[in-house]
Length: 427
Image 1 (tube, one colour):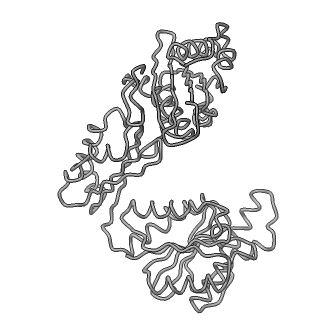
Image 2 (cartoon, rainbow, N blue to C red):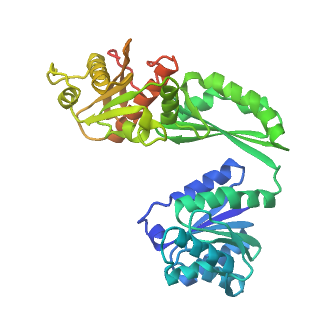
């Protein structure tokens, strides 16, 4: 099946907003074996939109159009879709009632211009949008089936996954059951994991298991796409492959499927009826920002301390013996974690201290990370050198801190060497 994605909007075309919707759609389709052949970005001009729709209708089998379903004058997708299909716009009474009810539930009166969102091409099939006022729809233009989606990311994602992908899979004639298994890891580069997992998909010799990767530093997502006649067939094929992936990647797997690193840490602490204090230097409080908003974190998270220097960190946790300026050490991180745990009355504390190298932000720039995890019984610490730009160091420090806490809670070594660190005789 040849698929095209058309993204609309002047703000997308001019780069005023980053087009994350396309990458999301393309990735989701690829995950289930549907490859995108063309991507077109077009502004809010009637003639340009019409030409884009007509061209896609000639060369593609299916087209997803993103954007242009709003209530304002520059939202033109319904109008141009009707013109390209040679039909009239008609009022969809069902969607109009739905919109009015949405506004009533929010104690608001629907503005008159929202009525425009219920105007659909006469031949269109309505596609539900459970979280917004933009009505999705599908219709034929040329030889292609077009699917029109809202530009708001959360609305698009629900519509794509729940409504459009099942329709595309049905039209493609692919096997009825497709499953995506995901492993999230930290500490191993993409090429390293590719080598470690060489031949793993061949454990199922019929070619229905596909191995893929998505690198988004500091994590790597390893994907297994499995096809089968039904879900039982898929599970039978998947079982030996996922078992082998877990065996080969071992301690580096931090979460699977929809789980996150911070979610795994929260679950481990919750199971122990434990609590956590965080101290962060240079990470901009990223660890706390990931952990504290999680459902259930209010019962676990005690305190987060964010500062930019060792002196500020020491003062914040009540330590008076502030060390003179110089290199950070694991002993400093241990002292900070121990003091933070006592100060917050927590069972566990994580301290992440970062000392950046001097010089310009460049590829060989780097930083030293000293972290410690303290409980009432003991303290574990680690020193690491990461090379890369400032943002690389910042993201790596936050990820390493959370991952070492996960490892500590799961009785795994916290000092296992990773691909992103530089050999250092002090480590």
